[in-house]
Length: 91
Image (cartoon, rainbow, N blue to C red; front, side):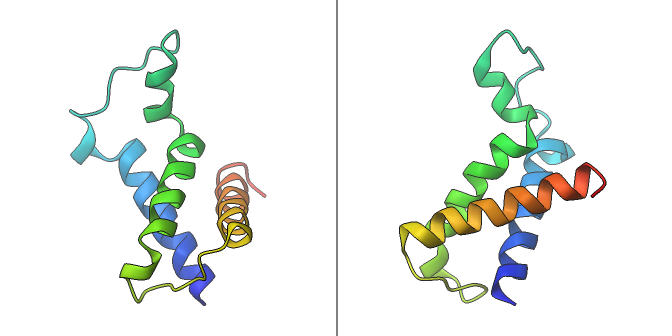
């Protein structure tokens, strides 16, 4: 159940950061010639960093509590990326 909470929290935060109107003024304009701008318009790019952030604040929340190991770090990132790709690519 904790994995589901982690994936939903990652998905929600990523969606808000990439597509939400609340951060529209903070996001730079789409200009793919500048690599830094790509980060703010790419759900998988932002999703990776959101997952890192959520994993790091893992001990401060009771919503999900995973052990701080390098294996869990990569496992949670892979789980989120798999979920995000399957949700937006139809399967």
